[in-house]
Image 1 (cartoon, rainbow, N blue to C red):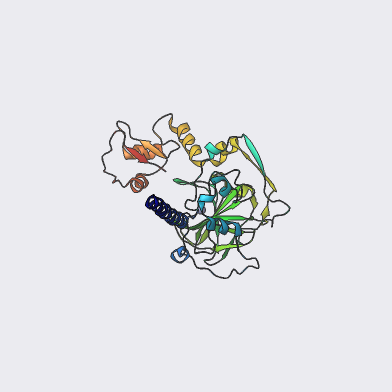
Image 2: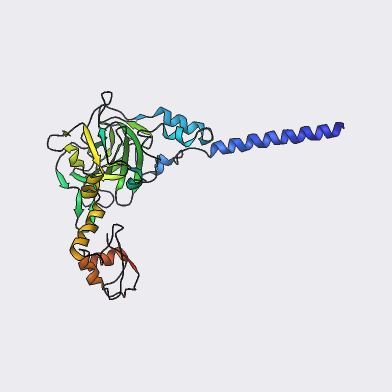
Length: 332
Ligand SMILES: [Zn+2]
């Protein structure tokens, strides 16, 4: 009887020790964000002292969340810590565009108040106002931002208060920072030579985010600047008077009809092609075209307002390549 008691006791102790070990392990793997110690060194960024009088402040609550571990937090309480958490269903520090506007936007329209009295106001993203490319369809692809000419190394600052959601290199945008704002918008700052913030950093309007540059898909130093709502790009010139260097209005109404008729560039381009060439023979909103019997690269290019050379580059084809019926060709 005595030995049975002893056995029970030792089983109990082993159980406790294993539980403790397991829990400790769970904690060490449960940081809510993918950022690990040392990531800062790996990133193509270097911390430097901002030259503006305002400093980028680390968001204390975000750091607390990292320490607690996800076991103690439901998704909702985690998201509740981020700006405009009621609008967005995730806080993704890995993708520039993780949202689907058409799924998320159920209203016909919504009016946003851009700056609240307690906010730090608005800042131009860059001191310059020489625009080199505007929002719209640019040759063979959509251009969802406004390009502002700069000299490499120029300061790039956040336009509103908010929190940095994304800060790293990615194809196309190069070194890129995305800031989520309390007014519901997100702003994108691309082609930077240097990133000076990290996800979770709280910023005020005018705080330094990085240095302007020419990284990614860019021909010459410029800032590619976007304003998005639930992932849908909007024309920054509808918000900002670049000549005067201020906001056109403190409110902005996002209308479903405006998105359809003005902002959804891929859909607009697809409709334009449909008007020109009828129901078939062009790429849909997806940007892809399915080869039909009798198609040639030349005919596909002509009907889609592009060139054989551009199609060959996008699809790794030769001008002499034989097309199969049903083959998917990327148009834009
Ligand atoms: Zn651009």
